Image (cartoon, rainbow, N blue to C red; front, side, top):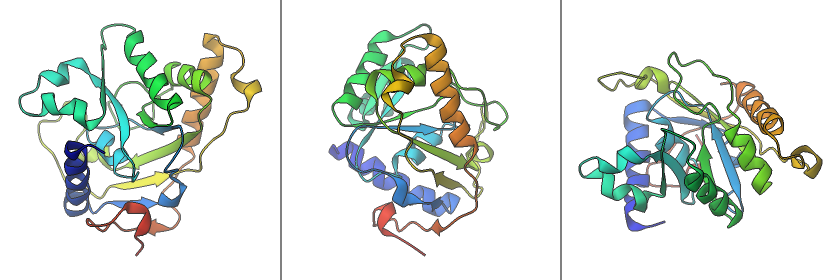
Length: 221
């Protein structure tokens, strides 16, 4: 992690614990080495940092290029592993960078739904994540965040503080036969499979608390 990433990583853990009483179910499912796609439901602006603090290693994110123009935070985003993407069209440069990062053994957070859900409910997958799966062959860790929409829904003007719980599924490994055919129907099928895995995650199971001074996976309550 860079110094900037480390600062915001620990700050995010602290804020998540204090304001949202964050709970994590099955943090032990998170692989801490090797190529990985972290597939997360997209219901709020707070989802990316929440997904990131579930891993002890630095992870990469996609974010709109316009965010890099924000005062203060904008110039810091590259040091926080943000890969800028042009949302006005198909940004193949960003997509190639995502694929390169994964092939190099990194973890990248992706949102199969593409954009934030307007009502907090799961939306259909887009084909983009399927393309990344097919091009990298990387395992996919399904993750579902509950409560983030209530904390900061789309078009909200202020942040609220409900309970937030993150559920991690087991990594999904795709066989060569499943990803061999490179066409849009294959990519969509893979994306649909990932959304099905996310949809299957529930609030039941062992819950781990977060110690703001310790990695998520090493803490239990």
